Image 1 (cartoon, rainbow, N blue to C red):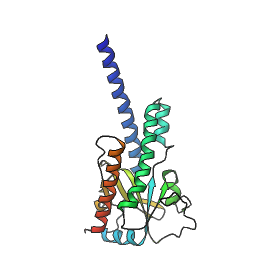
Image 2 (image 1 turned 90 degrees about the horizontal axis):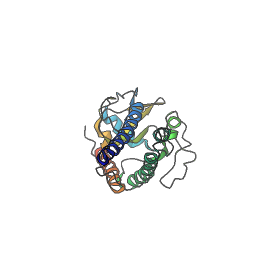
Image 3 (image 1 turned 180 degrees about the horizontal axis):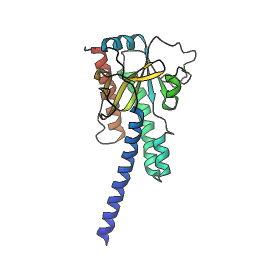
Length: 215
């Protein structure tokens, strides 16, 4: 009887993990689906990014994944997700301040992504969380996001977590098909320190790729 109880608990825990993973992949697929791929040459993207600005998207605490977990009664998983998001935001800001120097950058919250892409820049802020008032739109705008990556621009290809830069043109977000604009890291132990190392490594790799400008 005790053995059956342990097996039941073990299977229940595995099921919860599978539900959480499924939700993560579901939202990742929805984000990348139907995104056009830029046909601009690699060197042009390098030059434009250098002249323009990189806007870095930060994850929101009140996102669809957390709301879905709560709806399914996965409150513990939702709280764990919230804690990870808080740390992720902190590490992204700190990481770009310390590890990135290829071009100028600011931050914005994921909930403002549609407004940013459509040309409404009221939600932009600096590393001190201070809003950027009277934001002067540069000639080129790129957006970096931490999440599932598709370095070759293929919406069906899964390449783990990392930072991917995309291009905004005519109020449309476009995938850049060159892998110089994507860099991933591995969060092996699923701990705050492992998450920090993964994010910092991804930012450093991305910066190095851009500065090398390999054509």
